[in-house]
Amino acid sequence: MFTHLHWHSSFSFLEAIGKPKSIIAKAKSLWMESIAITDYNGMYGSVNFYLLALESSIKPIIGTEFWFVMDINSINNPKTIWNIVLIAKNNDWYHNLMELVSFANQQWIKFKPKIDISILRQKNQWIIAIVWWEESWLGKMILNWDSQDNMIELIHILKEILWKENVFLEIIAQNEDILTDIKKINNQIILLSKETDTDCVINNNYFYPDKDEKDAWEMALAIKDWHKMYEENRRKPKWDYHIMNEDEIVEIMINNWYKNEIIQKRIQNNNTISDTINIEIQVWQYLFPNYENPQDIKDIYEKNKEELIIK
Image 1: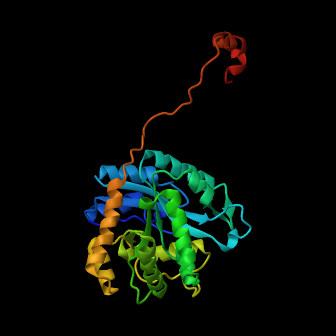
Image 2 (image 1 turned 45 degrees about the vertical axis):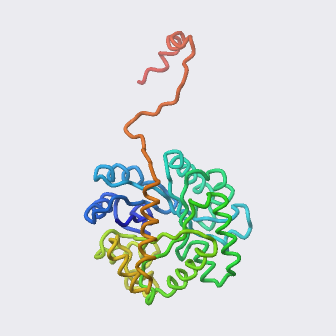
């Protein structure tokens, strides 16, 4: 059974469409046992997604795709902005993830919230990091023909911070004949995986639940970018980014000339990650601060009750 670990809902605000309810319904229709939410720089849909997933007997996996820089205080930040997906393994890291989201939204660079290596070092327990995509630091380095040594160094930095078993490289399941940048990055990721002894996962990074919703997604992108649908310079994503089942993933990768044995191994890595995750969000409870009243509270009330009466 295939587990999606990288996706976006309508809570990624015009970068994706699909409310948690429709996403969970789609996952249930495909008999999926678990699925992740990794919206951009926020966890606005996490609790709703969590509750809906439990109602459908699907394991909820909660993460966030952050914009990431090496050093928040560096003057070179505008040139070195990447993406990284962070997934919570348990309740402690779920709370850490919320703190990271709060931190990121206080650290704006080029109008985008950011985290960096230093804050990641402080919140580094029980987290899974997934690195790829054209907007990730590895993806940008590969497309810019950066040196392999620099790429390897960055992978080792992440593995040193988060521990080796929590860092994964990502292969994207899309048509490599059409998406040549993806082919270039996938090929380099495979080499880096061998050089750094880092396992790979496989995803198609979906942005809408059903295949026939692609036009609606493109309309959302146009609205966000202040473009009209008829304008030639609007974003026109090639290929499909819907919630794919395992057969679709396998078929795409076989057509890309990957061996079935390797494909199945990476699919199993996705499922193994799902097995290690255990989050139980406490909901439907009142959380008031523990406040101790002064001993003479009744005397204070009697003296001031006339002013306290709401007229």
